Length: 80
Image 1 (cartoon, one colour):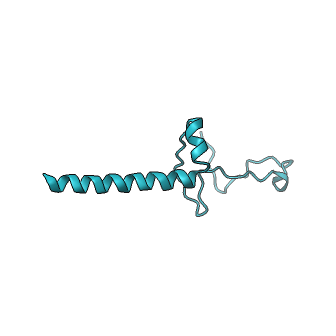
Image 2 (image 1 turned 45 degrees about the vertical axis):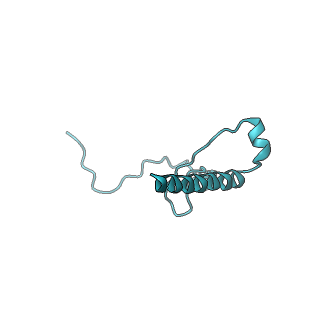
Image 3 (image 1 turned 60 degrees about the vertical axis):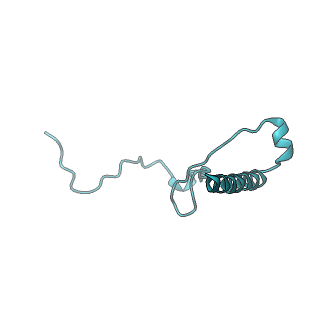
């Protein structure tokens, strides 16, 4: 027969000192508000990495490329 739990049992051993445990840094996928965020990683070829030194410059170039593509799509759809 199973033993009934009337109170919350402390299953940690008495010799554990929880104050001495190291503080573990949260990973890069953990946002400040406690929500998990998805992180994407792309590996650039060395010649491309020379032109784009950081992720901000890559994002800026890609956004300009997306805008140019959208403008091209709008112009080509008018000719139809």
